[in-house]
Image 1 (cartoon, one colour):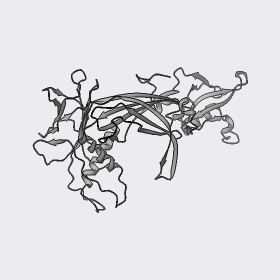
Image 2 (image 1 turned 180 degrees about the vertical axis):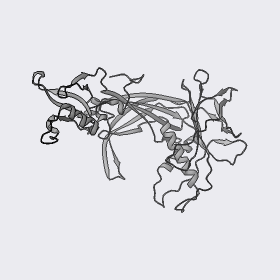
Image 3 (image 1 turned 180 degrees about the horizontal axis):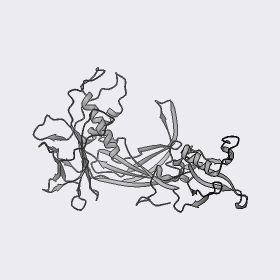
Image 4 (image 1 turned 30 degrees about the vertical axis):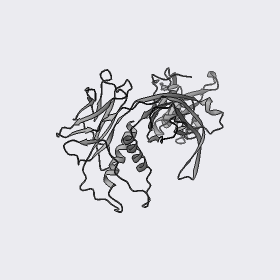
Length: 414
C-alpha cells in the first residue's frame, strides 16, 4: 500500500499544480502552497489500521514531507472515540486490541496539526463486502511498448460471491514468491602461507533460497450497474510475463483483498486512474480536480488531498507452482548470471622472469578487482589437485542481496 500511496501523493500533487493549466510550457510555481495529504484506510479486519499524513512537494523526485506532530483520532456513530498512536514519520496507527471497524457503522477521521488547523472527513459508512469465491489463472498475452511488442504469460483473475447491495469494488494485492539463485556460494576461500594451496571451508548456511515480495501499485476498481448481476466474474488482478520475472520459477503466492466502496470513493479512485492514464499529447484529456472527503473545518476553502477510506474487507490467498504453469508452453525467465570456471591460465604471466600466477592471485583478481564472488572449487579428484575456481556475480551467489532468507509466517511449501 505504501507504493500505491506514494503514487497517489504524486498524482494528487500533479493535479493540484496543473488542473488549471492547459497551454503553459513552464508553469510558474513561485506561489506554490504545500497541501495536507491524507492516506488512511480502516476495515473490519482484526489488525492495526494506518493513517499517513504528508505534504505535497514541488520536486517529484523528492520524498513527501511527513506530518509528524499531529493529533489523529476516529469517532463513530455509536459514540466511540479511538486515538491513533503517533509512530513518527507521519504514520499514525490504531491499537488492534482497542479498535476494529464494524460494518454498518459510520466513521469520521479527525486531524489536529501543530499550527492549530483542524480537519475532519465526511461521515463514511462501512459497507459489508461479499467473500471472494475463487482466484485462478489462465494463459494470456499482453501488448507493451505502445502496442509494438507482445509478452506471453498468465493473467490472474477472481470471482466474487454475490453481495446484497454492493455496486462499487476495489482490490489490492500482495505478492510473495520463493526463488533460487543459480550459483549459490558454497565455500569460503581461505588463504594459507602457501598461495598455491588455499583451504576451502564449506558454508553451513548457504544463501540459495529466498523470498521476494511486492504490492499492487495500480488502481483496480469496478462498478456494477443496476440490472447487472451482482456477482463479480473474471475480474483481472495482475498479468505476469513469465519470461520477464522469476516469480513463477518455484512457488508464487498472491493475497487479494476486496473492498466494497461508496460511490464517492469509487469516483475518487476512478478520477485518479484516468489521470494516471493521461499521455503527453496536448489533445489528451486535461487533468482535473480530484475531490477529497476531508476538509479544514475552520477554513473550508483550503484544499486537502487524499481520502479517508472505510470498507469491510474479504481476502483470499492463491499459491501457484512452477509445474502449474510449465504445461502451458510459456517462456520462462532465465537469470542473467555469468558463471566463470577459471584455472591459472586465465592470468597472463606478469613478466618474463616473474613467478607464475597463483590461486591467490586468481582469487584476488576476480573477487577484488572485478567484484565477482567465489562460489566453489572444482577437482577432477583430490589426488590430482585443484582444477578450477568458480566465480559469479554477487547477486547470483547470495539470494539475500535481492530477497530475504526469512520464511514468511504464512508460507507453506507445496
